[in-house]
Image (cartoon, rainbow, N blue to C red; front, top):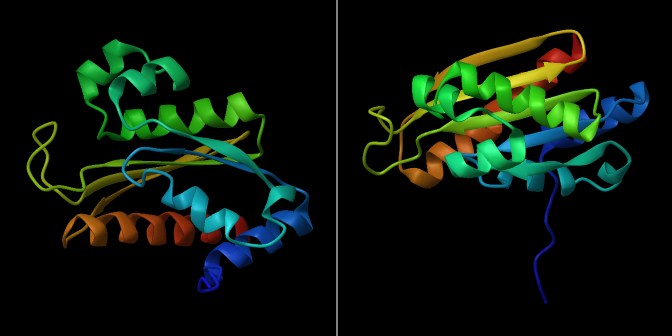
Length: 162
């Protein structure tokens, strides 16, 4: 017998508010590897508002599935505001959602793109605008990924509830 998964309180609030406003959401994930989509889809009824997501862990996937030009990845690296914004805007357009959340960063250990573990960019796109924020997180790989999901949910909730 498996333990029941309790939905994340912020994810529950997000799904509730999206339903009430008849809005939809999609995600593009790199650093979180699907954990953000999992947090949202743990909420019963999320299928009414969550259209789907793309896990674009590699630069190749970002180019192939999110149509991010290689020149942008080369110039800015995958762990950049430019790429986070492009990820959010692309996945929103591809799914035709009202909103999209993108996550990209370095979870560690080691260095990637000459940036230290805990460097994270979040972007949230709507039809009207795109918001981005850089995070400087600490901890091990799991803690950084978990904190990224928490931050993405909290940031989106603030935008959605405002």
